[in-house]
Amino acid sequence: MGFSLLRRITNRARLVLQGQASCFKLAISLVEGKSGLEIGGPSAVFRERGSPLPIYKKVGSLDNCDISRSTVWASHSDSYAFSPQRPAGRNIFCDGSDLSTIANKSYDFILSCHNLEHFANPVKALKEWQRVTRPGGALVLVLPNYSRTFDHRRAPTPVSHMLQDYDQNIQEDDLTHLPEILLMHDLSMDRSAGTREAFRERSQKNFTNRCLHHHVFDEINSRELLIQAGMDVLAVETALPYHIFLLARMP
Image 1: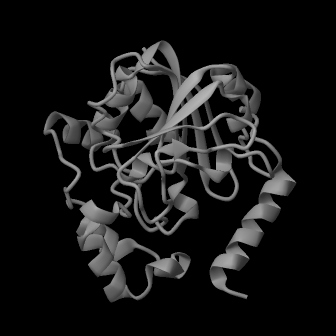
Image 2: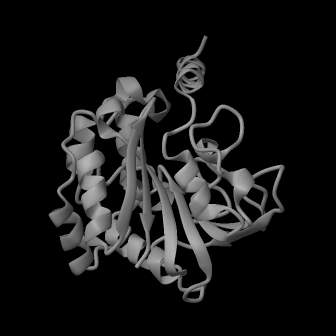
Image 3: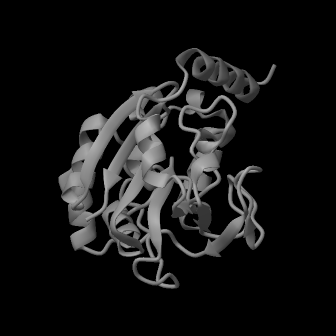
């Protein structure tokens, strides 16, 4: 049995044993019957069967933003078919930190799962997500808990560093964290990355593939980041195998 298949089976068993996230009902209240935009979807975490936060089936409508039609994680058409129980939305192809093709206050909520860590300038991304969301709208954010992933040798990124990145208008081709990543990345927990040399080569081309975790998160710095970005944090919850769920209200 391959390592990746074994890991998927193990993770599924953990989800079955753990059940839905405690914040599930609150998440439903934030998205039910409303219009949303997902960044980098679709996500198994939001799907119906065996997932900890199955909210797709409750949304009114959902569009998706991704960097291109084909990424490491998904291939897209113009139509965004995220759930068999809901009408398809549309795919919008642009950088998630530059939603200039989307008008202000276009959506009621934003979904993002295991996505924000891939942004070199996460505060810029959060500000853009706020811009396209109506006042009082919601953010349903899922981040990887660094201590349970291949990032476990790194330290949670200080929020002050991410704020400095925003002030300096850091662009998405930035490789400031690459030396740390190459030194600390636990390849034994990331077999799909291949050899050390293959991982190095892929990482150096990050602007094309967007695989790097520029920043790493735990419950403390993830909450603080949203607060510093001007949001009202409603819930923070960790869950197996490596998730941090954050629900927040936009300003």
